[in-house]
Amino acid sequence: MRTSLTRRPSGLWAPSRRSVLQAGGLGALALTLAACAGPAVGDDATAADEEENVDWASITPAEEITWWSNHPGASKPIEEEIIKRFNAEHPEITVKLVTGGANYDEIAQRFQAASSTDNLPDLVIASDVWWFRYFINGQIMPLDKVFAHLGVDTGDFVPTLYGDYEFEGQHWAAPYARSTPLFYYNKDLWAKAGLPDRGPKNWAELEGWGEPLRGVLPDGGAPLGLATGTSWAAWWFSNILWGHGGAYSDEWAVTLDTPEAVAAGNYVRDMYHGPKAYAAVGTDTNADFAAGTFAALIGSTGSLSGLLEASSFELGTAFLPDGPKGPGRYTPTGGTGLAIPASRTPEQQLAAAMFLAFLTNEENTSEFSKGTGYMPVRTSAIDGPIMGEVYAQTPQFRTSVDQLTEKTRSQDRSRVFVPSGDKILTDGLEKIVLRGTDAETVWAEVTPQLERAFSDNVEPYL
Image 1: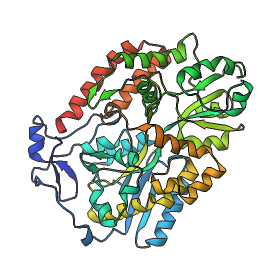
Image 2 (image 1 turned 90 degrees about the vertical axis):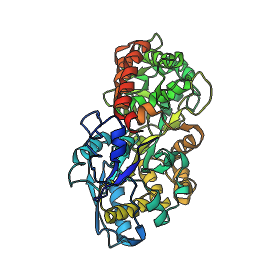
Image 3 (image 1 turned 30 degrees about the vertical axis):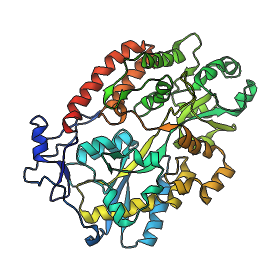
Image 4 (image 1 turned 90 degrees about the horizontal axis):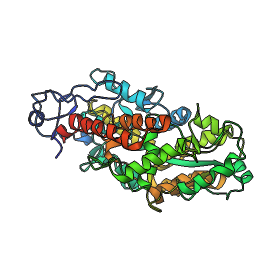
């Protein structure tokens, strides 16, 4: 059972003093993060043991709020346009857009560093591998009550995407720039190699296509471009892992010692180092693919607009391949949502919630998807008029939406709920991909690191 939460006079959500003492005598909830230490919270001994209920009907929204974004998918002009629309409807609220970092991790690290200061935003990017540590660190507020007050139709959010932010009956963020990995292919090279105009049904079929593709690629090219890196490698590997019947974890228990997980890791090793190796890591994998160096690419759906613009060939899109287990839901959801910091005043929180509801409504999520390639986060938007026109003009956009409906599942807890879990897994995968290390050896190193991160940073506060 998670610790009961209290609310400080300033509005900060924190574990109650009783619960902190029960959690092994720790005086503060400090998480070890990948790049910087988290703030200490939960040290207010005078806070009440029960959550303070805010009467949102009695609150007047703040006149100005700040939003930290990394502008996913080069979306800053779109975000600015949506802010203009919001100001037209709510001239009493000014939204200040701030570039909080170049990517999700930079924003998260800046948010952690600012958490004990007055320099926090009112709305912040909360990626798939960061939002839970915000929650367990007491830094974000649940949205359910304020959304209910505003009449937000949360049932219209794509259930998988909104459900990704649920923990013990409350939602701690709302989906925004949401994506899945997607299979992109160069239709011109596909045709030259004599391949059918579709993506591979499974990884074995793609491996078999390696030889004809190598015959039409330039020197130094590869049939598949597949990069590594934090917030990426452990994401796409979920597809291969699940397709082999494995998983990072069963709830909180790490399961990388199973034969299925070892087989999945060694399959990736052989993709890069085996006798039929067909994958490579580029300097800039997306750019290399757009230039024709790679025949295919595993990339985020959020890369779609950029690839359509950069590629000189006809771009094909397809679902991720299945694994030896057969057809199934092997595609992870990902990307980012938006959260409201718990330490802001109720006035700031209400204004932020109003803007968040507007930002993610049917029209605006459609415009955001149209301009970036990220998925609409509203079911009404998926089949709405704006996206219908997009699908008619650019059918590639439809692939990610269909994959979301037919093939996705939520991610394993060891990657997205355990602080530094993604980084630990990425370090292990890079040994497999870059060095060709045997998966059994790597997973034996990774498993105790994940278990320690859980026992130190999560278990005491559940």
